[in-house]
Image 1 (cartoon, protein in one colour):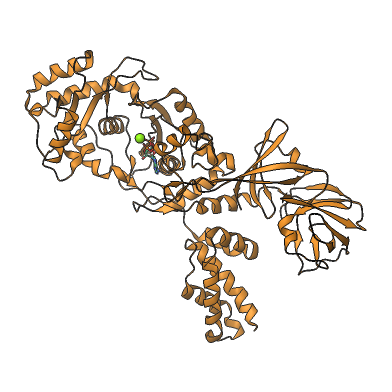
Image 2 (image 1 turned 135 degrees about the vertical axis):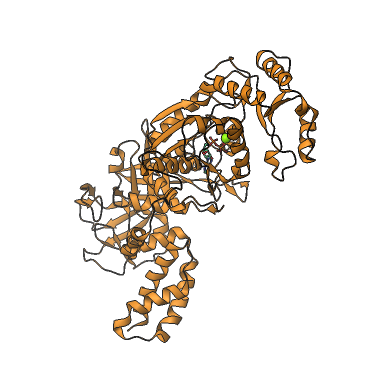
Length: 571
Ligand code: ATP
Ligand code: MG
């Protein structure tokens, strides 16, 4: 048994293990697999262990993305086998009965949806499906300062793109009259009071656990103030507060705000209302009256759960079963509308569909497909553990989906001209996919080619390489222009096979996204550009199609008038 063979097997298992565990292979696990696989060859662990140790170290130095790529190229069965073994279904819900589960996704129409919203929407939608229940799309548009008319529609478009269908759709702002009625009920019961203190005094009171004198007003008096608040502009700074527990260790319970005045025209309701419910009130009330059984919220709301239940308890409304999961965070990417908006306003990104953003529009533009987002969401599950994940996980799912589906072409980045002496003139047919039947493209070649500068940099006079799909060439001269001589057709295993184009090519720029932030600092170099020549057939690709440029990566093609633009998804 040669050391090379042990090394080859070790490398595959190390890659497989690394891919399974976020890029870090475990030496012991790999040793176990290699020993098992070499059992028949009667080879001792003594021989295996030192080889595996070195291989694991090497593999662990590679980024996850490269590990996935190499495994895909050398042992795709290990990658796919592993993925099949993983269970991506969501765990069962507590208190759930088939046919009776109702979930909802409640976006605020104040921006474009991002991959964090996709997580929430997919989880909500999938649970409704799993239990033959209902899924509601509710626009939580109770802050006219933020809500904008354009966002209602774009959010729906993006959800449809994800493949999400809803059974019912409505706006919380349509129910404001009901909210007012419930507020009045709460006041009559002595469960809420109008507070006219200054914001500073309220903050101070909450900090020192001290009730303010407003809370002591009789409910009749509070009711008058409430009506005044609704009808006139007199009581400007006043708010309606819940009679919570100012002594509670949970500061969220210290008489939270239920309603406040926002003097701004609402995109749907116009100037009909000026007193708007807070998320605490509107969220609890809407979940309950719309029949939601399992509302999901992100973990930062956990402390507000007692507020939610207290409001419903006082109003004698049905209590849904609140569930929480962690907020999705991705390394180097702003997964929050609040963080994305200023980037657009400052012109640091080109818009909501900038390919560096985790917005669904940005992801779509660079060629991330909805199914990959879905698989990624399932792989993350609904744990409450906060973590920042690497975007390469999304890329790995996307790659696995696209690899057998998309056509492959040649792209020569940073091209140099290559003249081949004695080159046979011919019309070559090249397969559009190595294993799937996707047809061919034909290319006419003569003696002039363009090849990648980088490929030529390591060559010297006398070296032989293969123009992929054509024939071998021996280098005669290397410089700004390269020349070589035709060296026959024989397939040689140990020579470089390089991509090429002919004079008949299309010029192209590919935008390549990088991380927008390095440790919270805006990355000036987050957008790179790859310039080069694509083979002619690329010009006929329909606008919006995703293809793979061999050795470059997956690219989504856009046609802008006569220009071809590429957006780089990943390797
Ligand atoms: P943002 O900062 O992006 O505005 P948000 O929570 O205020 O976040 P909403 O439109 O109110 O945005 O969110 C709608 C739903 O999406 C909520 O249930 C929210 O919890 C969920 N959500 C938003 N961002 C994320 C995220 N990063 N990860 C998981 N769920 C999220
Ligand atoms: Mg919000």
